[in-house]
Length: 86
Image (tube, rainbow, N blue to C red):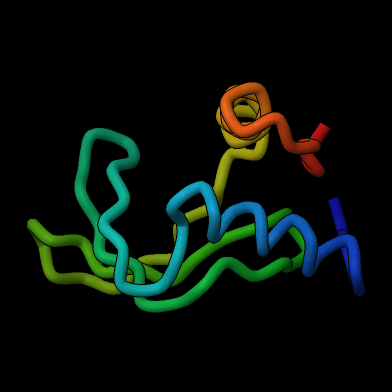
């Protein structure tokens, strides 16, 4: 999936609001990471650069948008705002 321009910016902005922001802790795949970048679009979807807190290795974390869309819908219901992720 390639998303470009304003659509990618909108999704990245929503991902930041959902907690995938630089310097946040992210729990994914049973491991904890500290994000070293804000989300960005690439040829495979969306990702962040992060450091594993256990192994202290830099990794590229792919953000599963299906899970994000569910969280976005919950956030939209809670705040009465429109979800831009579907």
